[in-house]
Amino acid sequence: MNIAALLSGGVDSSVVVHLLCEHGYKPALFYIKIGMDGAAHMDCPAEEDIELATATARKYGLPLEIVDLHREYWDNVAAYAIDKIRKGLTPNPDVMCNKLIKFGCFEQRVGRHFDFTATGHYASTVELEGKTWLATAKDALKDQTDFLAQIDYLQVSKLMFPLGGLMKREVREIASKAGLPAAKRKDSQGICFLGKVNYNDFVRRFLGEKQGAIVEYESGKRIGTHLGYWFHTIGQRKGLGLSGGPWFVVKKDIEENVVYVSRGYGVETQYGNEFVMNGFHFITDNPWGAAENGAEVTFKIRHTPEFTCGKLFREGENRFRILSSEKLQGIAPGQFGVIYDRESKICIGSGEICRNA
Image (cartoon, rainbow, N blue to C red; front, side, top):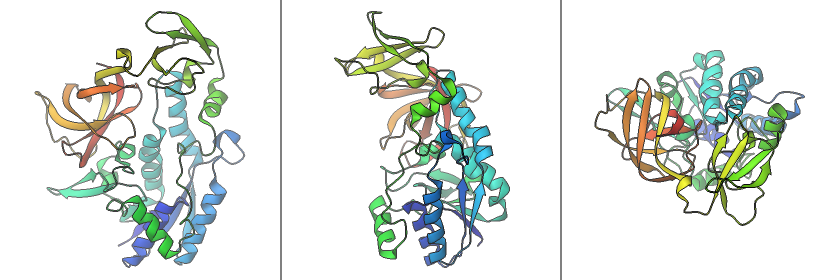
């Protein structure tokens, strides 16, 4: 079997290489470079990544090729993020990076020459009735299926996730016992396209600053000043510079550049139990058909280990509504609502949250 493996320089992808070699495979290794040379706003720790990826490749006597996709990345993912932020939405660049770059541009340029592409994502695949479905990982805390929820059937049917049945601590143990160069490297916490760059610095470079009012939602009283609605997202609690909190962002007026906040953990304005998703995308298939009476599902509206129970209703072509079984804090338009089966085993697909229902 002809396998391409994506190396990031981190412990997860290096363990993937180790496991593949243990099973007798000789994968071709690829490092996707998305940082832009000489551009401070796209600074990525690429040198250290490449150094560790090279050391891993050398340890197993495998070829490593650097695939430069920084232009494709900028045109597709970074530009998408800035456009959404400008519109007052909350984008998810990691989701689009997986869909368009790692399993999009890379597949078109390199992956198509291989039977499978293996990655260090915490996810898995299952075969049901002759079709491949994206499935959740054993380690619920590390599960990354929500970041993969926009990939299509061709992509999921060619992917291998060797870490899907392992807990993170087991991955660390394997790396340590195998003496992998990245064994002690800390996990990356940044958004994929930002690298070491601070989020606000990145946004400021493209959208600048413009002072506006922070207004208490209930009273209409101005209680502070912000530097642009684009620095704030619905549900945000930190970084508002207000005393007497906790304060949460509950609404944004894009035209007037006003950020509305509400105080306290139990305030109704922070919560909703319905939202609508546009452009809903089924990864493999629609298992519910018209869902006229509502399909029993679980879902996520942000990257957390927990799933929420709810009902999924079709509102129109590629448009669905979720009725949640519990109140949801900080429903942020622009983020993806990710839908799973009732048992939270299969990731069915996702759609962009467009508004509270």
